[in-house]
Length: 97
Image 1 (cartoon, rainbow, N blue to C red):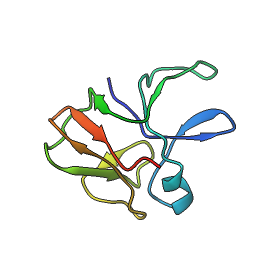
Image 2: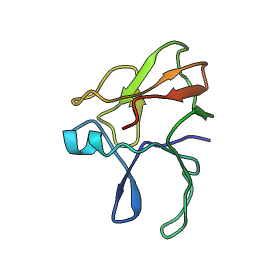
Image 3: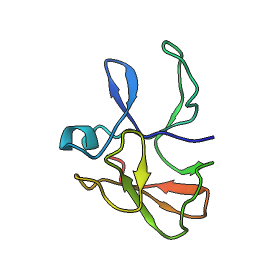
């Protein structure tokens, strides 16, 4: 179960990135279902532990990536921290505002 970083526009959610301040500031949380089709409701986790991510390094901070919908251990063009890995598959969501 992979979670994507999202922004909301007009009641819809979209993948966001660190390419611009506007996109970075639109970070909302992680989609709990990435297989939803247009028009369906998708729960979004905005705090706590996001479980089910993979290939994380415990103790490492993660940031929005310049790739839409991705996070990375290094900041993108605009620095926006999204969490810290508490294990190889769990990210504690931080810096939500």
